[in-house]
Image (cartoon, rainbow, N blue to C red; front, side, top):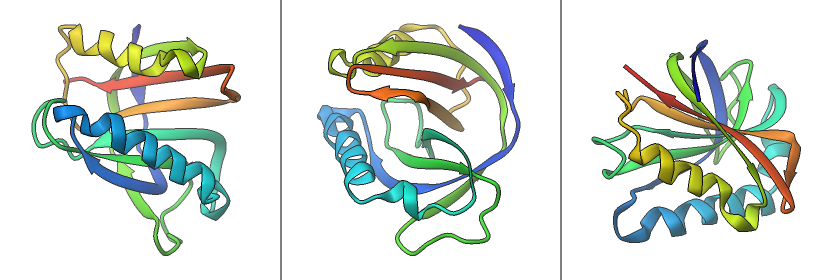
Length: 152
């Protein structure tokens, strides 16, 4: 883990409002991913900057135990063209604590990383936490993601 500064950025994708209460996120987030993959969302996103998929956790009502919005999509150069049915958001950037996870998707490596993050005494800002999935390491046998936690 390390502290890094992220510049402001735009993302276009699909969203769901969820929480970690009573397993809601454990159902809602995989369903969002399923929709993202089966409905060809990537192909509908204009002006993507790279091929890495971004999953942003934002609009927190409090801490990670309270409701929040998940935006799954691609970083884009502009929000001038947001296709129907998709959502565009701009994030201010800022200071983030960075974590890396890598392994088999079936082993739930990303979720395991989050469980460790929740246990850390971080001074979280709860503005936008971001997972960035490496496009070169993104199949069921090998997934790599960087998780950026907004800090105060």
